[in-house]
Length: 402
Image (tube, rainbow, N blue to C red; front, side, top):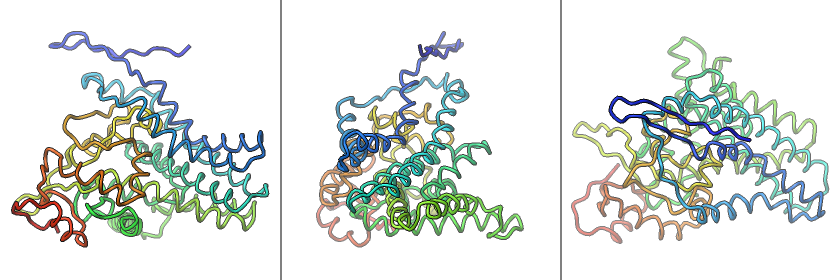
């Protein structure tokens, strides 16, 4: 039987404070989700139908959005007084640690299955996309680990990033995205009127360039060559070469197209997250041109219970950007902040159909309390500026946010 853990504090003003994390053991679902592709393979062995190999994709993009709608949102926060106890509870960090090797298990298993079974081209494509989608979860695991100060957790983050071959992510994310989030200059912040496909062409190369430049600058300050073994990005990519090169060596040429699709779709999952997390949001500048500090209303939030417990609370993104070092179990909800219409998986599908995304999200963006229809407070795509202002501008004095 699972133990019930109660955090208590005798507060001098508030008296005895007690808190139980009702989702404590539900967080195990974040550990198990990367293993979901095994279900498709198991069903194939039981039925011999290649159609069953698509079940994990249906779980991600159909079942989870439905479960988000069924179970609804959870806006509860842990009392701030007991957050220090939550933060040091080793149970929560252990869950993130044990998730890292599971990303390797899933990729290697799917690669073995592809290489050893006669599959139709469609089935192989579905498996490559499935592998990429669930390796993309490794970016989420690395995201949680990479924000921590522990050298061990940062090592685990590099190992998680090696699975989808995206070793620059934590460097770029921590030193670049968090500094420039919700500004026109951030390649990882989407602009109003910018489709996810246009955004991906700016975000993927832009993030790599910014990550590499940041790490090169750090090493140069230390008097080291950017191409030295001390480069954190190269360390992760070296593991990627060993892992993916090993798969090609062991399983043959079929791994090349498989890994190309796998890597791209894993990267695109991060792009999808970045796209929905800050769409159109803009930090204001003071008279000296300095951006205001990042506040909760500079990120789109989602409190949907199911997708949060399978994503280590990634969707409480507003608090994450306000307090990046907080562990997932302590992240809070805030009142009157941007809210997505579904959890991430459902919102991704919305983003993949640009006209539908604009129809739902543009008016939601304009209606935010801190914007109230003022286009000067929105990060607008310059190529769509004229059309957007013609459609939504109500005659207020506006300034170009470039």
